[in-house]
Length: 169
Image 1 (cartoon, rainbow, N blue to C red):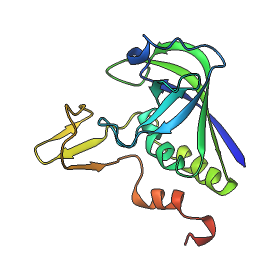
Image 2: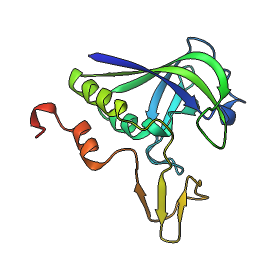
Image 3: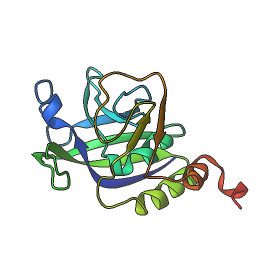
């Protein structure tokens, strides 16, 4: 088993502040949320004591993390208290952390490469329904037919994450 760590943030503290007071050294677990109506690639950060969602992984690395969770685990250690988001125009609060990816060496190597190539700022996700196209606007209810176009990874990158290295061309 191999591991790789990177500095990141837990987003959405302003939503969960009533149920969560982060503390230095607190450990959280990443859990994929494919049924999340705001983003089907959402990865929730869950508190180990009661499995409550206390935030989410930033969108800029979201799809890499979502697909990584099919082969490994992500843990998070809180490294500071809350702060105002520095790269989101709408603001919001976030908590600094260290994300650690646990998995086999081959998968860890792929994730490191994909995360190195991730955009530096949040990228809006285009959500297309039968009736509308919106940028980063939460859906009021889950539509019957949703086609999502992730802007963070193209198909070859997703295939690279899910394919063993020795079979890559």
